[in-house]
Image (cartoon, rainbow, N blue to C red; front, side):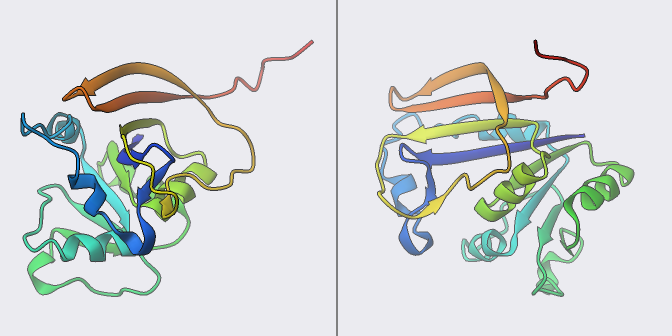
Length: 184
C-alpha cells in the first residue's frame, strides 16, 4: 500500500488560514484553468482518508466532489448524511490497523487529506509520497501542514512542475532508513 499526500500550502507552510480560511487558495490567477495535476493524481488513487474537519468543510462545498470511496477518521461522528451512504464511511482507531484493514479490503493507494490526519500519519511513519504545491503567499498564521515529529523523516525529490509561472508543485518519496546500515 502507498499513502499519498496531495496538498496546496502557503510559502510559510500553512494549508488553511486563520479560522480555517481557504479563500487565499483561489486568489492566484489561473488563466489556463489548470487543476494543477489533481485529476492525474486521482487516477492512481483507490480511496481517500480524511479527518472530520476536512469532511465537514467538503460538505459545505455543496455537491460531493469524490467518486472514490472516502473514509472519515472521527471519534465524534457516527453516521454520514443519507445521500453519502455507500460513498463515505466513518472509521476510527489505530492508524496502522486502519491501513491494514483497508489493504485487506483491496485499497492499495490512499490519498491522505486534512492537516491533523496528515500529521498523525506522519507520526506513525505512514506517508510514502507527498505532492506539495506551494502558493506564493505568506499567511503568517493558520493551520500548519506539519507538526512536531519524534524523529527526522527523509524524502527525496522526484519531480517538480511549475504551473502558470506561479505555483510550484514538488513530488517527494519517503526514504526509509536501512536498519541494517551501520555508521562508523
